Length: 214
Image (tube, rainbow, N blue to C red; front, side, top):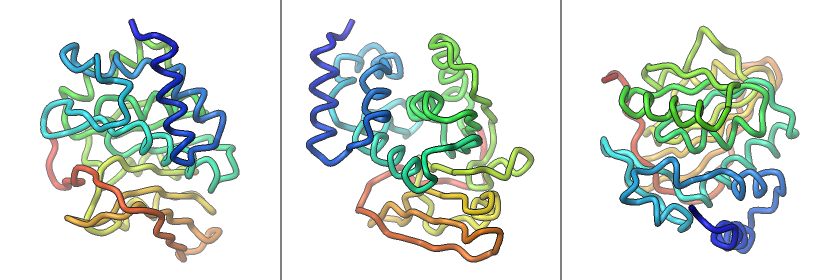
């Protein structure tokens, strides 16, 4: 069991790094991050660091989860009904989003990770999430369009399929690149096929692998 003090220290670190959305900070404070790790690593859950979850994947550091969520809410005006997450992973980012938006659709290509995430979300009573075992690079076209899309893995280039699944004025927050990656905010210009791209900050994510599921 983690103490409230431990969680408060994490929230304070996030604030010191510039995260200011109180709704995001409250969700980070109340979400039991230790439940999204194997027991052997759970004592490190409230460090501000990425941690391994198996299959070559990681649980993103809390700062990145908070920052990406904050960007998503700010860019969309804070009222999000349908959000697509690319890369369910442990389910932690999914759980954070599910407490801030109406509905989350999340795709994951590694079935054992998805199965664990589904159980964790169920245990937390988060019922507004739909999961799909699929190639994240192609999104979830049958459930689109989405008000916002958030990717927890980095493609070399932004998949056109994801951009086309954005609703009018929809926003995409995604890390892009290989060895050097940057976090990008992409906004659809109304109903057009024009997209405005803004580079935000350097990041380091696992690669988004397309073409395979397992």
